[in-house]
Length: 339
Ligand SMILES: [Zn+2]
Image (cartoon, rainbow, N blue to C red; front, side):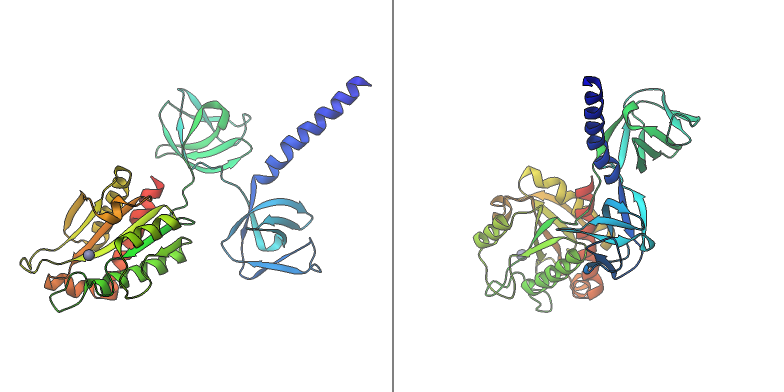
């Protein structure tokens, strides 16, 4: 009797340990737009939400032809006819081999034959994950490898700017017009234009955005930093344009940081901006600007071009070039968040 009870206890313990794990390993890739999510596993249950093509949700349980998916603040049922069930990628996308002579197999179990060996230090990209087996790929080879054998996580699954909070600071405003360009254009207007466009694109990519300046008004440097510090977040970007009336040939983009933590972000944004715009690279510099020094977020100040240069000024005021600048900033942020 005693032994039967302990066996039963063991079964209960094992099943509670194993069940949530194996169920959570699957996710639903939605195949259609406006797919109804219902509060039960049948067409007759009422609609509680809709999901759309390309979205991915963790699967909580399955009943016949229906699966229960986890939405942001609730869960609900969708028909299997409109989703693909796929294995949830573990929270790694890169693995490094920790030992020599690690077996790569043809399939996800030791029953499959060994196709090649990996050695200590080899890097692999993770393609999928199933029950402790990673499907991995390198330039030379691909195969399956068990998580226990010899792997350690290199970096977490990267989500780019999605769900990050970005504070955008359009330089100057109101009575502070900033630099004045060769045709009379004022820095404050151009900086605001870039800020608005950047905000729009970041929101489309799933970021949370705070602007320190909402229209053409004067905002003190102290207010800008306190707005940034209150809203918190992963990045503070102060946007500016330059002018040196005496040197009309000078052109290019330069980035500034002050606190050491922000240097890498400044470098990532600067190089992405140069890559996409082809502008003259004026480098990344440490500078004691108030909005950088007083910021609790990682903070960079970008001088995005010279409105005192005839050619630059023309380019900078076009929508196409503004789009390039914004794409460069976002590429830089993505590279920074993912590396
Ligand atoms: Zn400025």
